Image (cartoon, rainbow, N blue to C red; front, side, top):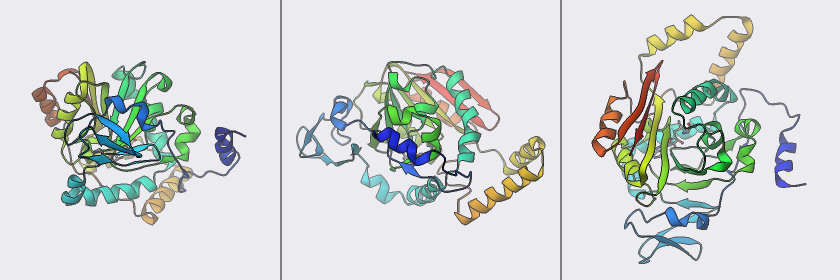
Length: 311
Ligand SMILES: C[S@@+](CC[C@H](N)C(=O)[O-])C[C@H]1O[C@@H](n2cnc3c(N)ncnc32)[C@H](O)[C@@H]1O
């Protein structure tokens, strides 16, 4: 039996509750040498080569680990010195472990809305750098033709794919992606090298969003696109009121809410693990314009926003 068949056989006919810990799967990763040409040393800007299983810059003054087809560019300075980021990142990783299939179902229409409105859903032949990509499931949830693009998962944390994503998106097993450990604030890509940079629900987890926007501009080709999408911080009272208005209470609904709350309490899922809190998208839009992006499209809707810029 081949590997994909094995994976499906592990899932078929198994009980799968909404509130249970997910089984985690490795991403289907390309080997680093297949995309080394677009990478550069984050310290010196030199090209990279592979020596004894490591990525080294051409002057051999800097080396980056590779394991399991993941290149590791994590900037230790940010990790060590930014206590706030490290503390919130720890909290976030706890949430990652406890991600439920309820969250997947709730988020799908939002993802589909943004990908359709920005017209990025149907792109083909593009190199896409997804910064703060987490599990990399957006390769197949955001894009309709994942096999026709080159997708880079960029994140400082290794986050494996939850079984709910594997169940919903067969292409996650069938299409490869490029997996890189790196911070948004220092991207290991050459200048003018990629078509699309995006940050989906991640900019408010970064240590420095302005540094990310600058980096996005540097690595994008002329006319390349930057998409920033996330939620806005609206007062909690307003959120609860909106939820109550749309909620049709019945016994199953009530039981589900109780099950969800019990799950969150038992897993100690934090309510807020964001480093940044945006009340509107203005600060990001201003920075995009400052570094030279033209705003193609923008929208604030419900408690979300997206900004689409062109270099
Ligand atoms: C809420 S998750 C979003 C994941 C994914 N984009 C999605 O929509 O499913 C936020 C992600 O930002 C990542 N992150 C946190 N700090 C970061 C940084 N400085 N640079 C890049 N990514 C970061 C986290 O590891 C996490 O995977």
